[in-house]
Image 1 (cartoon, one colour):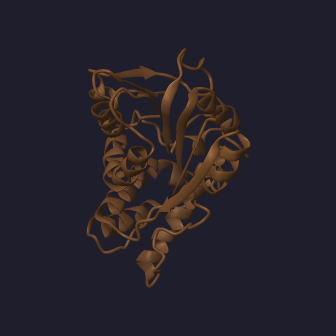
Image 2: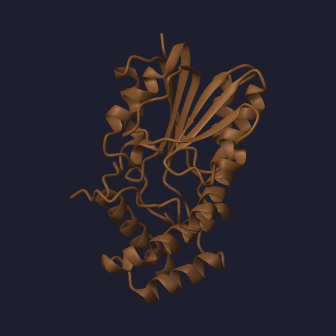
Length: 264
């Protein structure tokens, strides 16, 4: 059953800032390498979709320079706003509900966006239509079903508890309409959308301090929902947060699938 109350990980919560910082630390080097290889550079016109925090639009702005343009959009731009200035415009925009920008782009990028949308097909078509001929689209989305565990090395009760709570998080995501196997479909979807030279790879950190920071912030943000849905007790969540904060667990994140192609 799909709950229509919107995005599970509400950006207005204070934990969102911690989550964005952790995602930036983990994923930005991977994302920047792909954007660099796709030609991010002086004079480029770029659309950063669902920007979240400021790191990616700021990086794109530095690459595009004063002769370029970066449009960074999100349904809530409070965390992305510090990137505004120079070639970077930050604008509130709902990818599904609002009209697309009245311009086309050399490069369009969305990270951890489409997986959460109920109308992913329409959103993807909007991104493809926003490309100029020869323009590149880079979509990066998680595939929690591909590797569902928080602790693949489940060697004791703390790891088992972490995996139990991660399973609860996945259930909450699915209840909001997220496709937990979306990442793996991206190469096919980009080809079906008419893009050429489609390729993909995946990023999967086995453990990192930033993985623990991201996990703890997510659990804290969803604490009430996890308890209300019966996925964990308050005591279990406190125990798990203690283990994560103390660095006793090798926490992973779901694989991030990056897929890209060009408009003929």
